[in-house]
Length: 430
Image (tube, rainbow, N blue to C red; front, side, top):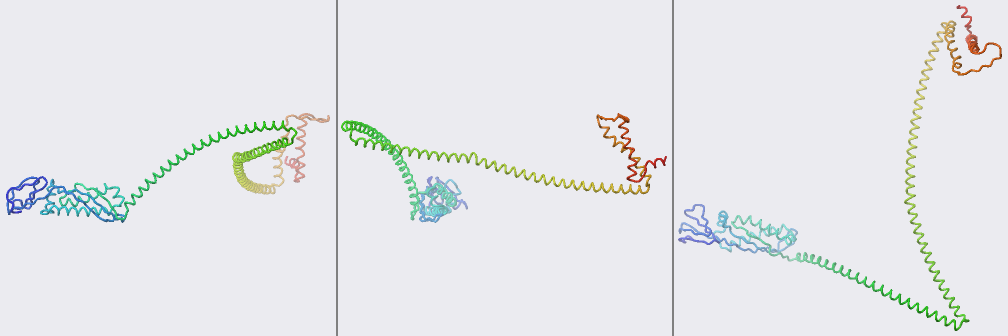
């Protein structure tokens, strides 16, 4: 390369890397242009910028769930000539190498990343979501190839195969589902067709039976008419023969037997209807009468229990109140009795001290009260009717006299009870 002399040119699909004298530690990069190269003191290298197609084959790689598959992908890569930085990376990595060597490096890098992505995904994800798989491989591989100055233009998943029949099993499952749906649809159509045919047969049989019934009726009428005619002929031929009467009796007995069968069937049906009606009424009675009565009984029992409890509690409270009142009254009577006893004791002591003078003084104080008690009932009477014997006073003076007589008898009563003569004591004191 150092013996190239003169002007060097390159097309738009390649780049020139010129290094040596006059360029120091930074080579010159020329894309689709020309340059003057000095022999021996400068070096020129060519880097291809064409798009390179890689067929990335990764055979028998175990996926995330341990299923081995083989994948073939197609990648388009190229050295990016629009970036001087990436040209520098490419010159460092691929300077002086053939295109086949560059392809091999890129292919090995793509295969490694494709294998890594396969190990992190399941067969179903790779097979059904090829776009995600391709995008993951493209993103991961682009990072490493960028450091080599190579850009990944595109990557697509071309083929997915396996050696254990896993993909075929997935296809068979889907095929089985489709076949199942087809069989179900066919069965439903056959069912609808069978129903339509059965309905048509039913209509046909109904028409046939109706026609046969009409024919039988006509035949019956014919036979009846013919039998009637034959009977008339036979009756006319042999009126005295018992055979006709016997035959008539048999026919009559048969008719009665049929009538009895009809009546038995009718009665049985009536009995069934009555039994059902009885069951219906029993259920109605149970729902409308028995259950409400039980509910009412429970409610009344609950109310009675509550009322009983209330009465018991009230009685207990009243008994306790009566007991408390009795105890209070007993205590009051006891206190009152003690007070009266103490008062009477004091009076007794006073009587002992004053003796007869005290008794006289007490009686004089009590006499007005006694007079008031005697005349009290008389003062409340609205009308008094008095009957006189004719001797003594009458009218109001008679009533006053009787009150005074009662008062006059008091000293004698006091003398009998106490031994003190009040009248004598009053005279002595006067």
